Length: 357
Image (cartoon, rainbow, N blue to C red; front, side):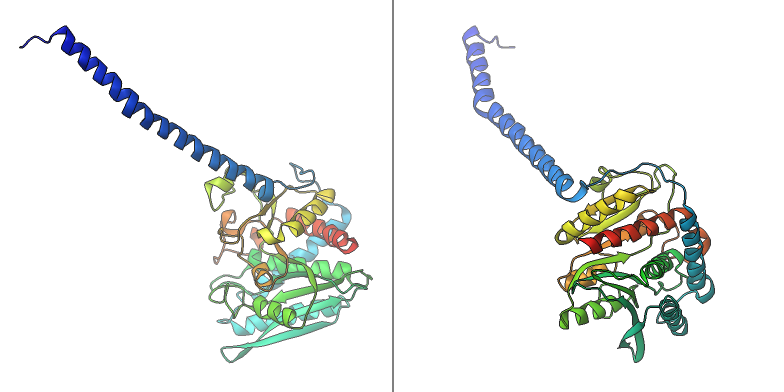
């Protein structure tokens, strides 16, 4: 081995220090500050998401309360209507066209028995007539509050929760406002053909309907879509979300009712959830999010967004909670009628509050 002189060692150490100072430290510095900027950016985005889309007004409750005598009556109405739609009529869609029409007839007759004159808003699909059924309670103001739900079921399913629950709720709310003299016009609508293959297409019943509303200049100030609202669970990890980011903001237990809107309908969403929480007997969560996030646009409110109207969806979150979603096992016995009732009772208070604004 050739001995290394002290001078050579010093030059080596000096070169090493130079490399650290000139090359290594600047690289580490860039990595550190780059990582810091990314972290700050992600934190800012999450903070903005929480502030604008997740943070909701009103005091939320953590436990479900018991039914009042009036709500017990409401519970049995809801149970009977879900049983009629999903238990007796069963699967109802374009493959089961007679059943789709039977559901339309049942909804129309239910509005009539409540004392509200129904109207069929029909369109043709594959050479067959399809019907959106509306019933209106005129108000003194030109603005319209529209409450709606689709009455078809997906292929292969009797559709108790999706969406017999939403239709039963729409009918129950119509009964409770029949005979009143509201300030806003209250319009209750049952839509055809929300499910695939018509989902988010021009053949979707609610899109046909909303487009006609826009064409005639209807002043719809609020559209409320009642979509799959009858299933709840207290089991740990019974609630999932379309992304881990959203899961960080919301409960892991599916014991709440959800209020969902796109960003443009944020004002309506916050107004509705504030009214709901004033009288709530069931936990609630809200989200105003971009419509491209999975689940946000998955119902009839999408059709009204497309036509410039503000709209929100009320939901138990469907596939993110309900284990029988879009299956033959979506039957009336799967619903939690106690908590389903509290949602509908709370929505009655919401409509009353919106009407006074």
